[in-house]
Length: 115
Length: 115
DNA sequence: CGGTATCCCGAGAGATACTG
DNA sequence: CAGTATCTCTCGGGATACCG
Image 1 (cartoon, rainbow over the protein chains, first blue to last red):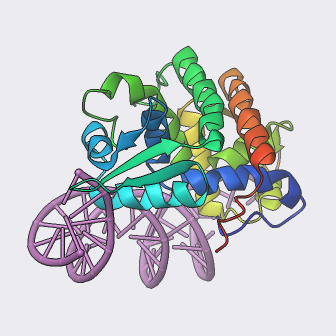
Image 2: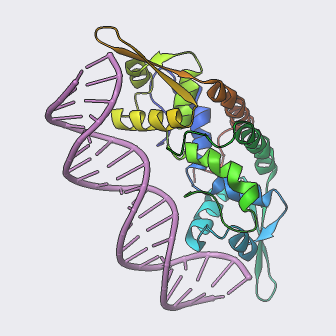
Image 3: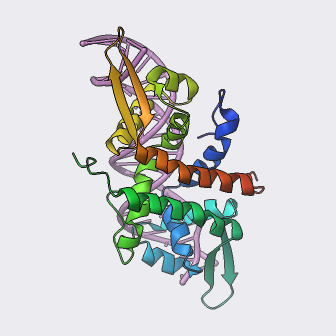
């Protein structure tokens, strides 16, 4: 997903592509969902999303920060603590997330996806 | 995204994970969006989504088929033609897609994402 | 037309060690 | 605590060639 799709539909899909750029980071959804519960510190996120390794977690957080979906606040405590929270834009994305969850719940896991 | 997240939130995130399994296939969104305009044949899809190569196109279509999002119909013409269309489940996913597009449009491309 | 088979490659994820 | 650095390795994607 370099920039966007070339071709007749270039315009139409640019928005989808911009969403995909975020999804590109495999764990972005989970992190957004996790932060939707409220601000969390790095360690807390790391614990709650045990599958996501340190490196990936930082990477995705950086990406989301760059895209103004996540806000990063440093508190000069000792030792320092860093709090991650959703921006307005980030919180707004939850609508989409909810919509997808609803969809997933409604249709359940694909019955045939196993075989 | 093997199966789903282990940990305290395993239950909560299984739905998100099931969505991610679909998104996993990089081009799934675009294909769903494309098919939302109506059934299309392989070649047509291939043309309209020029960025998606043959192999990827087949792969994603297979995945979407397995997940009952896309229906594949073979017509025994000469030469044969194959038509892909969205299932009810697939069409239902458009709600999410639309929601994400709305979000993308509302917030535009991240102003800082460039630098 | 509508694919499958194959090879190659690079991005990204996992694991581990180390730093301010 | 909150990361960075590095290495490895797998998986998915690009490209090309071939098949029913």
